[in-house]
Image 1 (tube, each protein chain N blue to C red):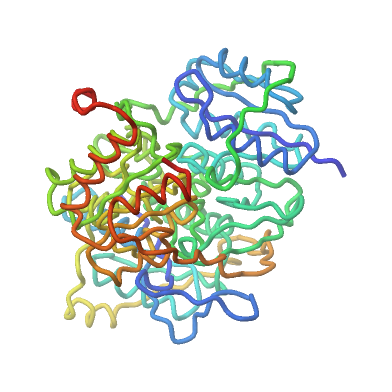
Image 2 (cartoon, rainbow over the protein chains, first blue to last red; image 1 turned 180 degrees about the vertical axis):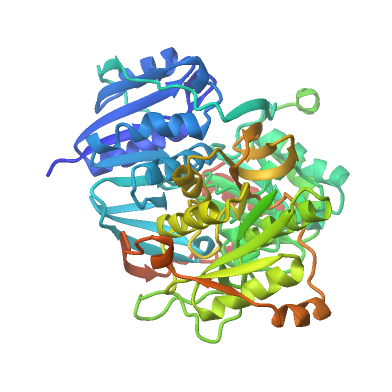
Length: 325
Length: 249
């Protein structure tokens, strides 16, 4: 039987979110025909970029003002109406997809699988459980398979060279019992934590929000995103959405530098997918060294300034420019 | 306002779990169990609503075997008025649990269902959204702030890259994120008293829910462990290796 896959696109503003590219990679692994559903108040530019990507048969567009806030109540009704047409429905395992797809699944009376990291075959999927301390392989007995895809587990690539047709679909009516009243997006010129090539994370060892700034200076020199352990977030050194770990974000950058983080299993669950891990810690027995490619034992308050300065030199950028940036 | 809070019994947060050698699951024999931390946050929020006079009746519910009564005892000790155990074999699937919760929410005519955003065993993060869908109620997931006023819930939600605030008409389903509150410790005398309180029992049959599994476990395996690398002596050696060996800076 040939697969027919529907990818539910996540958008950022009116453009495509990186998580959508990852979900498309998972869809390509399943093989068969791929359609993408874009829902929102302004879908034009997202639909356009999708239509030019390879392997997409059709871009289905649900456009209406009430879809602006990406409310699960409204979006789920739109998606659920199409579940019956596909063998698989995929969404990214971001807060967007995690909020939406279980609601779709229940409307369609289907048990879904969260956070898929590997596709064995059309009905068998692997996902992490116990904060990534174990992997569970599940065979889905449902007629339609609904999956959220862990963004760090599949490649994020925009494959060009397609000419998908774009067609409108029913956008439904607002269900009217929920509305968005405020949206605060972090304004930073730094890369987003989930998609950054380099992440520098700090732990409780910093001791104060002021000293945590040292980490931000290092991040600036590396064009890195700043992360934090739960301990650092709880202590108020870093905002909530910086938290890396089981209950925070899962990251898998090219380079992850953990500074003053002991390496509790809950933190490791959020970063062991990184390509290269550096650990800087005073305690030579800290568990973080067990997963680090390069470990440096020492006082972070001596190491960080030296590292920051030498990275500036390596990158050939004069101090003055960086101080402004 | 009547509030229903779901509590799941899971392997304790601090236990290093072990995968069974035969791949059938995770070792649970002689392992410390406790209430799912996110559910405790949901419960604490409901207890605070009771203390503020917003909640008139607080019902705690769990779905599980006899041993899961212990999480209901602590819920009673924390401030729940009633406790209900719905009978189930180990690890029922989220859609089945959501069907049970939805049926109970209807039967008890509650105004709010408060759950943890996910359980730390299966990490599914599905039950709240599914319960809301089955009831046709609005949902406020990953809540880090919650206020109830004039039949509406205002929920600050933790989303990727920021925070979204939504307003929901009650009845609604809300799932708690880590920073909604910090649950209190249960005092021993309260725990002793809770031991004598009744726990109501329900069955899936009585609630009209089919518990047939929809997904089958093939195996549980250990993730490929990451090997420890090398120790470097100083910042210079670190930078040299990052540039010339790993090629990442």
